[in-house]
Image (cartoon, rainbow, N blue to C red; front, side, top):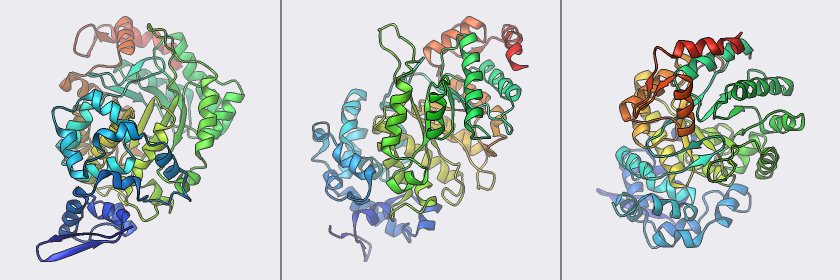
Length: 470
């Protein structure tokens, strides 16, 4: 392990190891200041970025930021590295890798082939050298498709998670929110409830209610109750209709231990839900087998005291190695949820959302984003409109659909059903194809290339759904 140096003006800056170099090179954010790892000045940040640009990519295979012996995430990254996939860029520096990614010769095929050969630290490193437009351009070139009951991640498509949370888990209130979302064309990524109560019987009741709605109206989507993975395992044992297993994950073993999980437990849950074989059979004969739904967020390892002196964006990228191991249907960076201690304002939230999306897609993941902020952050809905639009341009797989953009159970601000419809309209994006066909069939959308609400027909559909909502 050796120190890294770079001179800016008359001053030479020294970075004692790769972990420190990465932290100092990152764009400014409150969480890195809280952790004591941020650059002390703009000049130091520039020096770190220039030193990082000169670093060979393969250096990340030789110097672990989190020790190999004491961290199963590091072991997963190193032991699972695909040297053959890495070969086309193995000779490059981080700076040259940036230029390679931006070149017109590199397309979705090349990027998909490269993904198994990249470590999260490589993705994080190159993101630190990129402007926002660079992150958008490269992420847009990445295409990651997944399937359960519909097909997500196709070009020209933007899916939504319909999030019908209720502060008391009232079934009628949840059903009313589901109806509202469906009438705006939301719900193709998943209809996913964050339960107010985490007891297993209540989780089972919610799963049964969601399954009844999806089954009765033949909606080509999937459901999920976002409870702890151990609760989902108990629900499966009780015969509950589980489509997807949810879990929050982080980028270090210690942080995941704080969530009450490890890699073995996630694999146990994946095998349990796969055994239910609830995915659709598609026209090509394949069965939908992407059954995991992960959520992440910059700052989670720091909040758990498990960051090992690393910057929060690098650790966020490491969480994507955990996700990648289990071939998920959805990965959602809940970008502004943890609060201003980690991402202080709209500017930092926007940058973090673009970084997370870029790194996840580059590593081969089906990335979505909960474009959100807490009420004590220096951000507002205009900032969320900006990030929503940028992520739509960047090829984000899915965003949130929350009634009124205000989650009354989790008490934070996100994006609404109307916001998702706006993004689809202005950017020419459409829902997942199977879900879009259903929306047209039941009279919510008009047929055509642009997602248009069928204003005259939607009330008929609303009346039809009024029964289960009572």
